[in-house]
Image (cartoon, rainbow over all chains, first blue to last red; front, side, top):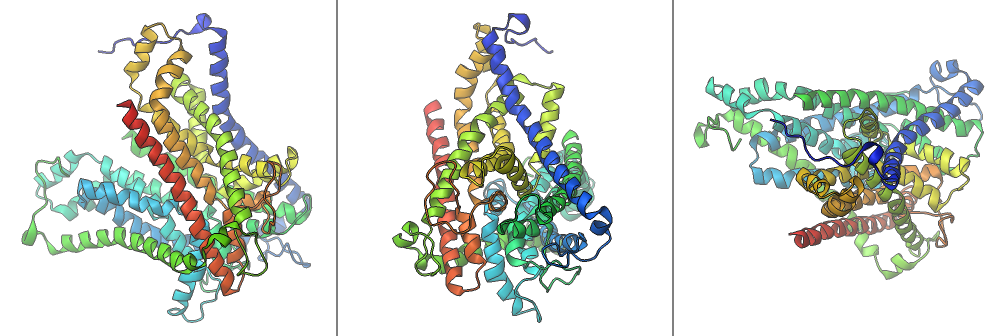
Length: 302
Length: 292
């Protein structure tokens, strides 16, 4: 039975100072709405200015991206290809490692082992990305060059792999939460029917946690798409429409950094390109985040 | 699972081979990333520690790798973190109080919640673009420490709000009701009962959240942190550099000696980060003891 709990004074009896404080707290919270609105407005205004000068066709139907050269081309595809290439390599690392780690933590590890190993894995996500960038360039690339013939000093594979390691905890933590939330009675039911451990995990536990696992994958991949410093340091700055992971490429994020390192005056077309690229990047990550959060909500509501 | 009665696990030799193999594979997926982390830190230490000395910490940058130091970057980073905290913590805690104590399940609160979750997923480089247009240009702050700190504050705000809310949620409902029953107004109960109880959690969470900002590089590059600064910032309106920017500058050079500088810079960055994190944990432990 629900008992009506004590409530603070509300309505017209509320002292004026109380109402002012409440309004201040609301303003703090509402600032987040203004942040979103600000991001969208800034990107939209500069992107519209960009398109009024360049034209949508040259953005979508050109296979070269050379806005900083004398012979300017504004085809976005090389930057998108670079982004998807590094992100794809990162996913190849993070998905299997993250999922298997989540299964270990949830299904095999003792409570104590889980309590130590989970935070240790999460340290991986707390290392500043500039450190990963250094690691990719100075350690991973030379190591890979010993194995892969024809690997350039700047390439997609090395930052992709390192980015994959960085997002492992994003996959493993959220997936582990989802696996852990699966009711024990489901496992016990499977055991009672004579199922062994592995069939129970694959046929009962994993399917029950599927929406949470899918959410973790989508959110982790979105993070890789927006990751900047690792690719800016180790992938090179050559926009190239290729799926060859051995040659220098450029991602959307790395292009924004490249232009920002130079002194590009506001109002020029070069300046506006970073907002046009930023809008494209924002659209990619926004769609994935909304989708990922929807999946995450679905598993929480179970 | 420890609580299950009919635990399907079969011990020792009777455990099927496939299960043992799979279990080993899963364990490897935990161990290998941790090993890579060890290699990463080890590689940085091996390269960097030899270069670290007092002169490196207290010198200005230089075109000669052996003379270059990290002082303006270190000071810039500390200023940035302090300013970011001053801006982000009150706003973040205020927003958390609204969502936990005032908003309840109102439509506005739900909309704000959804929005914060989305903001947490926006790439940091996009915040840089917002800071460039809004703070640097429209509000006329120029490429200053203040513009950088405002940008970083917006970036860490979702995490500050999230961790503050978690701390507020640990305060038992009965305590609030007790305060109301004694005639406290809404704010009095928050100010005298809820906040003191939640404070250690809020402090720990916000320090951890703000300390993340010290490693942020991309948004600062976009708002225009300088790569080569031979002076210390004098005021919030000064041009500035920061540790990760200085490291990026050194990593981008082909000479081996600058890579060594970068490794030494990374050691300084990681030590600063660890110090902030241990302060956060220390605060939590201390307050927790006092409250008991």
